[in-house]
Length: 174
Image (cartoon, rainbow, N blue to C red):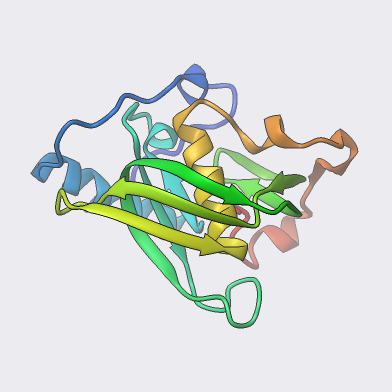
């Protein structure tokens, strides 16, 4: 497994739409493993293939149990061709991004989402997530369409730089 370079805002690849994946093979599973190591090392709780310069529709989500709220379940999986098929509710929350290091902003997201995708075993998946897991899924799926969290911020005054001492205390990606 290798650490991959994470693209930083301004790189045009972050604004491109990723291509659908036809079939999961060993090279895609290797990319997924490299993405996982890169995400954890960064540290982050999500990473999309376009963030490492690969314009394919794959994301990793790794949200530990109780990450943001007590009682939140762990959500840790790679998803190929993820698509939100149902969303309900609306909540505001601060997000950051590994591709926009040191910045955060308040983003409206659906409170609960249902996502259909394919797993690394080529089998279809359907995931229902709420809270922080739902937020991370929406954030990462946005990356597949060239959308960054700053595009979703309604009140631009909420986009603020995170003090350096707070940046080392935990992940900024949502």
